[in-house]
Length: 178
Image 1: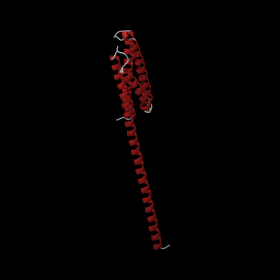
Image 2: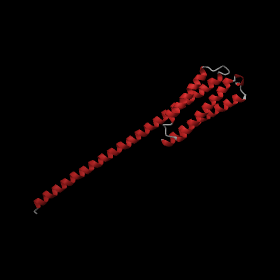
Image 3: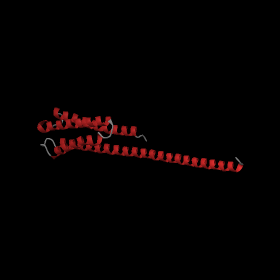
Image 4: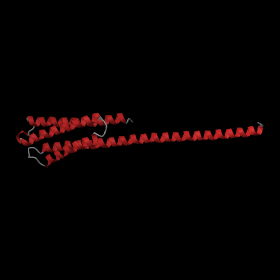
């Protein structure tokens, strides 16, 4: 092989190697770009999940707060017979019940689900104690055993509400630090 042919072969091999290097470089760049897009998608999805979590918890906390106010209104209406405040309490219990399934069960936190169920139980017990006071208005005086029972149930509900709020904060900080 003479020098001219060798030079042509060398140039061809060099050109091929250069083209192959460019192709490999382009492939690596594309792979890096895909990786960056995937990573950004994960970050966006995490932000979206956090916002949905916070919105669901805030919605449920609002329902618990409404029920707490309805309990207060119902006891203030005593010893009057069952009134609009009592039906407002029933609607609040229903919204807490549906909120438990619509907002809390979907959040993926077993602790929040348990606390939500506990709050619902306390709320229903407080409503039953309030019903007993409505059935016997003479017992609807502060200090009477039925009134004290209602007060204990209301405090239990308030405690569960506060536990739920604290657990939301803890879960948010643990799942999405920073």
